[in-house]
Image 1 (spheres, rainbow, N blue to C red):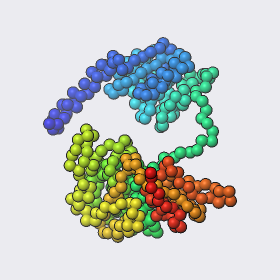
Image 2: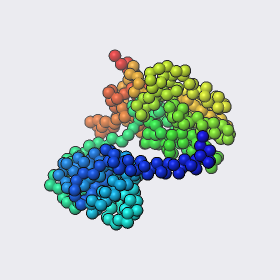
Image 3: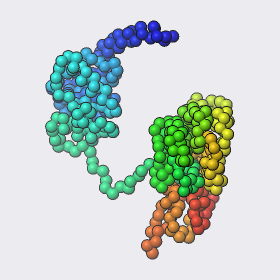
Image 4: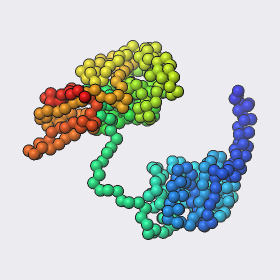
Length: 409
């Protein structure tokens, strides 16, 4: 039991243990020094593997420090490396952990040698270190220009492929229903971590904030307090709701905050590999468990306005979102429709006699729809049969009735 007296003693013990671990890590097979050059490179993780490939590919003469256990710092190994080289380059992704540890070791030993890395912006402070940009950094450090090219130049004229919600994704229909319902009103749409973060992209433009899992529900509450005349919406997925959304709902009810929570229930954890969650009734071990009902949870948290809606029933979805926005207090709409990656479509859609108004493309942004210019120079919309999942949202948006359903054989 970590009461204050024991916490004090354990803190002292842990600091001594860190020194013991540091000495052990200096002898660990996961940490090593190879080479005899006066030019030293320190790296860890996947970056070490990339640096090793570059050294081998170009036949570079460097001393390479491999760090596989960065904490506690293997200080004796660091000291040995520092004494062996005249200058150091540190290559690592994310925070400059190895770099700062080397600085610390040099300070303790009163050693002053050039050290390049993130601290002096010699290496990028953000982003991935891949083969090509890592090789360029090493060449700059060694002041060489290798004869072999780093890699083949990318082909020119390739189309841009920004991330987008899948064709037939129910999240698109959910976002569109809320957008239609809130048209002309002052509203803010707080997002969350998941596939539905892509709701920020044009033409939906329905994600104004995204911080971390569960934060959409609480950020919406803060915005509503700051701007009472704003309709504050929070979008959260079914999996994220169970992971970190319920406490935010409880907080909203407890503090009587007038926010609208949209739970996007697609019966899976789509973004990270379709893992099950408590709302499905199946565990990661393929066993069955009692399914936890999202509506029942919300009602147990004293949410008075809770409704289940199929987002592809567009007119009803729009009407219920408007009703939720008019409700005083916390409202919850559960948009229920399964992820398209889990189910094979039974219907698809065709376009006949398109007038070229482009409303379906401009408002939905479905990747199964594209514009084509005919012989008269007029644009018409086509549907890619290999991408269409038959959700039918485009049919409801088309103002001329040019989109019709067809059965998949």
